[in-house]
Length: 380
Image (cartoon, rainbow, N blue to C red; front, top):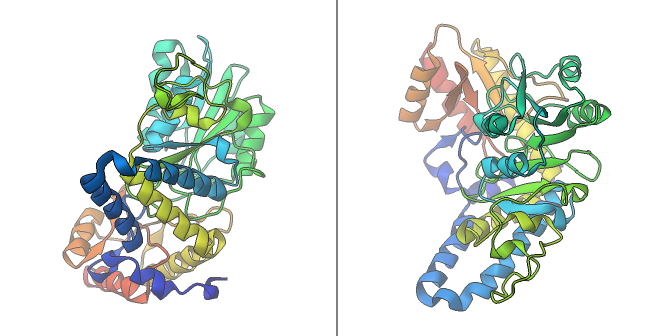
């Protein structure tokens, strides 16, 4: 499948590759030339014409929504455009009709964005239960034991940010739903790596912004809310853009939109959404499956080369749980010092949980891997 895509042409779209061997997409990704041009066009238009071009750019918002829905296997009416994953998860956390004594379940290994919004509900009498994990691996039996009749939502990362462990969404959804709760997913480390189809996988909510694996700019993301829950999830931050009469500023009508757009409130971060649309279009055109296959190939080769240098791979590389993140330790080497040496040599990596974290993408090539390998070898 990957043979049908010219990956060198994709690489040519990524100017960052001229200077850096980039292994840090799990943190903040660079954007493509096409994405930059679209954002530059918006900036120039805003500078030269101001509000005259507003209607054109407003239409592009719906294009972003449609592309996001296509990647999610969702109806566009189930997709809200948000600034980041935290905002998406907070919309769910603050909008659910909690009652004192309810509880939400999440995990000890979660990134703060998928822990703090739930813990913040303590002032409303809601308990946040943390299920222990080891290297982000989910024990389904322990999860099942933690859920009780007052559990309303279970929130979990699709892919862990430290080791890159990818959960089986269908299996987790089955456990959660069998016990009467709903499943909320932090999808930021999975979207753009492994395809997801919400028409088949019964998750209830998913939030992910675009500045990692989707190769989009910061300030633009997606929130999926299954249609069945729109009337249950109370909008917060309601504004002129939340209502069915959006744009009719003299109307006193307060009927909310009959879609997830009701959660969008006010004016959009337009330049970010314009750039995000281009990044989503590039992914759709390449094909999510081809992208996934390519990232699997690149990370598999990376793991092989690292193991040959004595690295211990902490990431689960099985078919069910691999992701774009490769977490490893190198005996007798300080990961923070190695990170520093890599950056000095034009290789960007990161450290999470005391391990080196490497996150390449589809445009990563053999030269990039070789540059990394040479630095690791020289630091032994």
